[in-house]
Length: 162
Figure (cartoon, rainbow, N blue to C red):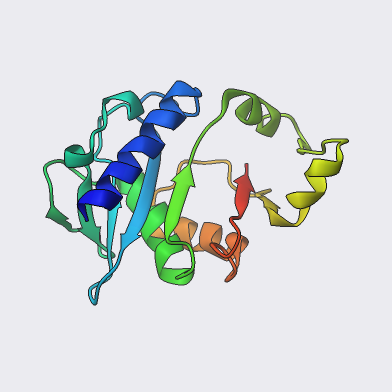
């Protein structure tokens, strides 16, 4: 678990350095190996740049904090637990808000349509969410997001654009 904690802390730091976060409103999670379904996630109220391996919390898929100090943010639970539950291949869920992609998502009909050969590598791995325009407040919304990602989420990585 310690190695996974260090890897997750590194992911948070990279996201912070690249500006892929919005204050304390973002979250990334990782399913832990083992018999009991548990996931590691950042606790409520910490900036990505503040997170360390020891500050991450471990939760069950019912939202109970099993290890660590801090609170599981409700919106993080409703998104991440449901994705992990419905898409077992999605071992690590990285939920980021890059400023330019966020700006693109605010434009009606916004699409990531690059005119470059390398774009062909990701075209079939991007899902656009045409319905999600409110904060996630329940499992129903988390289930909807998980369904958008499909059962193949995690095989090669699926990106979800708002």
